[in-house]
Length: 301
Image 1: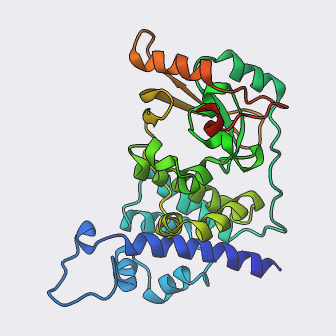
Image 2 (image 1 turned 135 degrees about the vertical axis):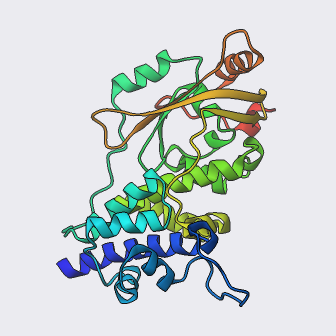
Image 3 (image 1 turned 60 degrees about the vertical axis):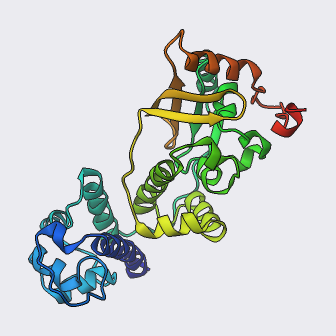
């Protein structure tokens, strides 16, 4: 049983190394490429092994998930050779640690409940849009503007409201975000980071399985194995109710919760963006418990 669990962790480590290797051009690491055709995208296994200072056989075992206990020095050498940034380097360390660790069973999905005082906080933040999401991006609670900001999300049942699902499956998402490609890469990176530390978590595996089947864009980006994405401090929405609106964004983890995060948006008072924010708050349906939001098609009548 222990070896089976370690193999799973080793496979995830191998997938990350393979993804980063095939996306690292030889020129990026100072290697000269001859005129001949290279059938392998990015670095070859033997090139990365040489850059890292390990044998090709050892590296192949790492990438195939057969070697599950690389030393910290090997992990750091791989990170340098692949020119990983700080977040990717830390992710590699966590994958290596998990590959060597025995996990008796997958962790249960965290609670979806939101504490009452956090819901009060959301209400107190009006008219600024704000919401609370789970570690796998389920929308757990929001104030009216926080829900209305994602146009059309209120058409879905509360249990289906997930921001990753919205980005890739809701028809309004591409029109709402002028930088949809950047937003989706950041979304994938967050989920990939979670997959590295809790790959068997049921809330994550169910979501990823659904999106891989239903969205070719998600499946393509998921295979890239990016674990960092641009964390924009400003976001622009082309909103069907209030027009173009650019807001300052802030996200923070909530103490004492199972990975829940509070996300809030604001605009400078007296600006057109703030006027649009006020309008959004005044016209949005109440997302509170027991209230069924009116679908946007009906509100438009």
